[in-house]
Image (cartoon, rainbow, N blue to C red; front, side, top):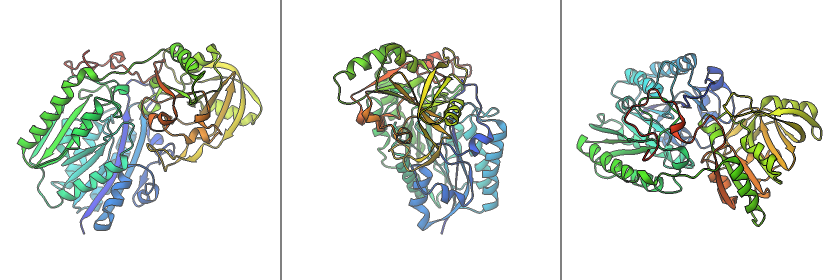
Length: 491
């Protein structure tokens, strides 16, 4: 049977935040498994929604799988040189020891940058290609990948998430397995094409539940003739790199076919440029509107704190909307997930039912963000260990460290010790909060929250409060981005 080497290394790198993704960050068990090696991949990744999980399930019965190493970090600052070299070195070293192999599958992200390598995944793929020669290399990528020519050159096929919220991660792994199987024993594809769009897209406008992204990803599903794969990635705006932005990639048996389908999809995207739009409110506007709506609504109003999205590198500890809730005297409101390890520790030291005086949030330096000092009641405590259940991140055993539900006025705050985007209901339920029973629910998320919180919401409001994950790319001080790119659609 064919011998297939499998592994992964991914990170969504925000160039504009102060913290760094070091080796300990990847080795820690948080809202995803820690760095795993060899056969431990089968133990840690047999459940959940990762592409590699579905890839393994789809292909293992007809192939010999050679597990290398797998490490994925949530979004944050650039990966340190030490972390990149140790993890990439281990993955490539294990691959060298496993030779000969027939193909390689890697579960990547596509927007990872390390301190020495602007295109970290392109560098990883270059090293893998050096080891395997002309054997097929197939990768799965996040919808927010910033795809580079080097990544395309060193691969023989790509598959990219088709949804945002990312509810098709498993399907992406299955598509990767099908693509890799079709390449076994064949020469490298003769045709490959990459097209970079002339504008960046705000994250909130990338949602595939609405137009124009819904139509764009639908077109990228349509494969015919000699086309092996056709991909669209919306890009990750807070990445200060030359090739940042939306991309179309095609692999085909001929260069003519690759160019034809890449040009057609690019033409569609450019023609819809003016349709990428999302309206954001200030915290005071959003809270006032939420209070007004909740007076007659039977379901909660959901406020998305889009610029403190930890899924984009946000610190998850900003306080703009919390402060607005308190100033407006809001009631039956909950905010989550706010990461403040010191506040969580103080709550555990005090115990349930007790009160603590502390400054909440504002732990990481972000312009315009200060802690909210108050006397908080400790309503509920939790270990931070639970299993997720939602469509985006379901089936994962996570460890967010000590957690606490604090209350002040009419507002509850779900506090964790480690960052996690509010894309699942279980972190709230872990502390006894059923979001559907609240009048106002504030989630630190840009789009992923829609998969679980959208169905229970009377209305969703997008809020622009101070945070490290700016929604408007015009707010970022790019230095490396190519000069011809418009910083927003029609900008």
